[in-house]
Length: 125
Image (cartoon, rainbow, N blue to C red; front, side, top):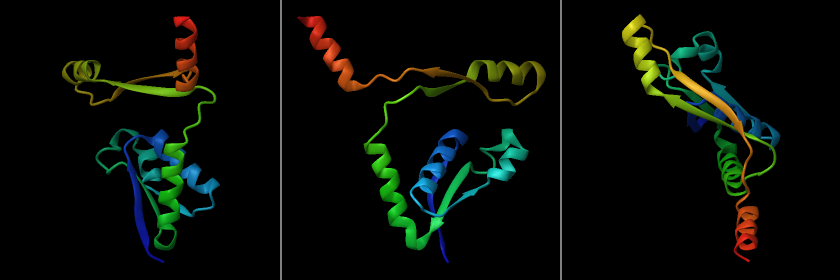
């Protein structure tokens, strides 16, 4: 069994979503560096991020599953938006010598492009 690199992520949430998507499609995948980054949470970039590995025999199936999910996005429910801020991170670095990524997360209601187009047409009338 030969493992191939399918995807490489620096965002843990995105890597977990892709791994769950592959699991639900029946594709065996391995989530590399997950345990190590869980122990050392601020070293995800130093360790090379998160890698999703699949068997060579299932590589094309896994690529098709990811491509299909990107093409047919779901507009149900809220989505998590994360934003990295460099200024607070630099302030923490210079004042306290701490190297910490400063991120904010918030849930937003997704906007379906089809519904937005209908609203525009109705407002123009």
